[in-house]
Image (cartoon, rainbow, N blue to C red):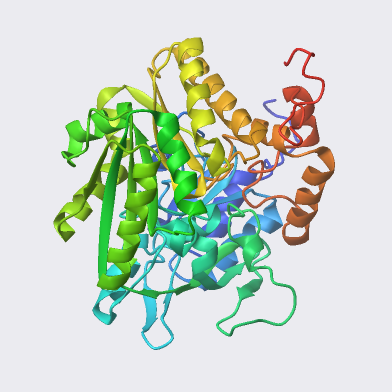
Length: 497
């Protein structure tokens, strides 16, 4: 009041202002983004349906800066979401309300290529394809090759345990990483794995790979490189029935053949892709298989002959073997461009990522066809058939809220079918926020409690990429799903929520 002798106390600084003030002492102004205009590009990753504007975004350039940022956030209780290129399809890099996005995009140096040890030591912001390009002069390459390899980063590959078309023979990210260095939320350095054949103590490397940024922030990775094969050829095999094509996948593996790549696409997918990249696909086939063999010319010739016999026995109606490296790359370009091809024929598409035993590929495809009729939506199917990693693409119009809801329900049904058939809810895209509910179907309460205990061992305050990957007990109670065990739902007569 005017004339009052009582002094007004200044307001306590808010958490955002305290955070920005603390960050300004660690980073230059250009490395701290806080206005809505600057933070909006970070509101989502490849799962664009789930968005959240972060409190701020930081772009550090040194490990020391990352450590200071983490210590500040720990002290202030601010959630931190690590981010690479943002190509994740499950919302793993979606910001948290009133949280900080820690972008590792400026950590893009290849620190060392050791051709004798066949290793590459890189920072997490290095693109997947850039590793192979740097190692090519030594006759080496990095085997995991997700479709987004021209853009996705090694740090993100670590978080999601990325795969690719050659993961059947050469393994996922997990099988091609020797050592990971990082920082905990408290800014403490941590190391997983070793350059030696073994490391002392617990083997925690498989734990951090696929942990979706919930345990540590990756700062350096040592990758395993493999020699480039002398020759590679691809068989394109056509089938007049998708189930026959699916059965052929299982038969190839049962024959003791491990192709360098074994992919499958249904007719809807091949038509969409052919219009986009003109890969030379058989558009009359109900499904095609791409089966690659690599090695010495003698090894390739023998394996191509063996695969051809198996494929013909399984009912292949047409078999075409790539006659040149250019044709081989063209065959693969179609498969790797399936996602953008879907974007050309539909306003939106929803990419699923479930894994099933190979023998059930045909079964799942039949179920998806039934779901298409039930939900009134089209679905084109492309997948890493060799390891049963399915990528159905549900086509819909995101401008229609009801249609988007049907697409989500469609996707949920596909993932629950994967679990029922003895598979999992994710193969390489991670859980993120997309599959939290379906995790309640696959994992029982004791298992989920164990997951949280692992999380607490690294991040007891649950500030590092919180509310991702692991569903809470309360969430699963609200979801109302029951765990599938042995391929059977308990009490199938009861209605589902």
